[in-house]
Image (cartoon, rainbow, N blue to C red; front, side):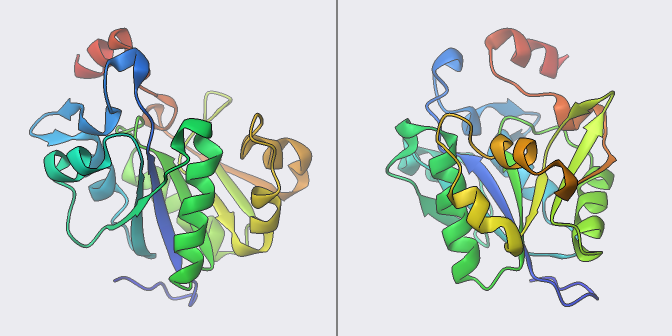
Amino acid sequence: MCFNGSGMRIAAVILAAGEGRRMGGPKALLRVGASTFLARTAALLARPGVAIRIAVLGHEADCVVAESGIPEEVTIVHNPRYREGMLTSVLAGLGAAEAAGADAVLLHPVDHPRVGTATIDRVVSALEGGGKIVVPSFQNRRGHPGGFARAIWTELRGASPDRGARAVLADHPAWVIHVEGDAGCVAGVNTPEDYERHLR
């Protein structure tokens, strides 16, 4: 595990519980080169300052674990409520992060496997500097991973399912720090067409 100079313990939470209906199966198992989206995302999040990596799984979780090539050191959390929306996975990840003694989390959907490591490092650095919510932006679009300090986890837990974590950003704009992102931080893969563009 890695610890940063600020003494802050940061957990990276990969949100990978969805059914991937438009893709025809779990996006965690989509291939990118010799890897899968889940394994690649886990590798990208193994950055200085990130003490623990957590993957929240739901749909076909056993299959995802068996076939994704996810590193053994990544903590697996099962979310039985995944059909109720992504916020349930956020809450499951927060619970695991809290149990691990984390002071902040990076929330990262598995369908954004192209984010640059420099973007992740800037989010981590801003959290270490006291940021409550840190979001990378590219061409005026908010991207991933979003950083959330423990001080605002109560707001995340109180968010409505239909608005999710975005509600906390919208309701507390003064808490949000924007850092420079890259094209990958906003490049989500939601459809087969998105996936074809990703492969190109």
